[in-house]
Image (cartoon, rainbow, N blue to C red):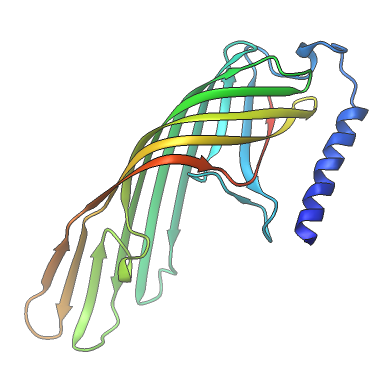
Length: 231
């Protein structure tokens, strides 16, 4: 309940600030909303959790370039790396990259509200590796390519296409909040898992599990509020 009240208060503060702002263009659209040549940068953040974190489907930061007042190119990008402490006997790492180019069509809305529809392509790649050098049960070393121990953080390749609809609300000059819904068709291919075991006595043993594919068709609810600014 406290988080809800805090988020409501924050939005009220944005609205109050919007009323307090003055625009050189008066009541025309041009003074506060982006025009041809403007660039925006935004993140989709969740204010209803204990901390502020990215919450869109691919954990991306997104930029846009406005070709005109009504058309914009968009590009979402994410690059992340996670690993355990290198000095331990257990070493695990993941590398994840995704990119989503697209286009938006904006409508008149109001002086501050800019509704839009759009489309985007989705591409994602994740790799995972695991190595355990603890000597247990007659095994000196275990290495896994494609996932962590137990199948966690399994690698994958993602490709898809999506349709989006949302809005920008300019709470001040060059500052906006918004929300977006999407409908997505995507194919995710899970990585092949290769496990190599080096026993204390005898040759090493390598086993391989097949890759798996899944097809997703349906709405994509993107939790959180889009917060961005215009260059």
